[in-house]
Length: 157
Image (cartoon, rainbow, N blue to C red):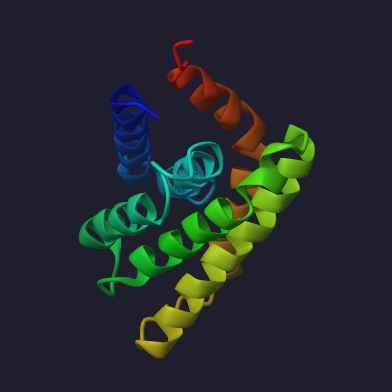
């Protein structure tokens, strides 16, 4: 991939970070999907050598700096998501968007579980069942988001 691919990845990750950090009313914030995690997962699947584990770790570190109670918890969780995307990119990319949504749901559950475990181990437990809502909204949002992200970069032939 070229430098323009890296630019598209950086721009979309920045937009996803803003969407993730944008203040919303409490009732709407519960429904907000993990935009940055979905974006990192998309680029880990579509461009595994450019948008891989490094992008996941750095994006997670930015999330930690802005909202994480424990420095490194989001970095670990998003890097794990990116690893899964890179490792399984050939299998995931060939599936239809509906099946990809199911895979994304499972990956988001794993992401949320890692955050849940780190929060519990560090003494910052958040045990409300509402913490799992973004996994469902993220899976539901995957098809339109993947379509939008696919249009953000068109390689030149």
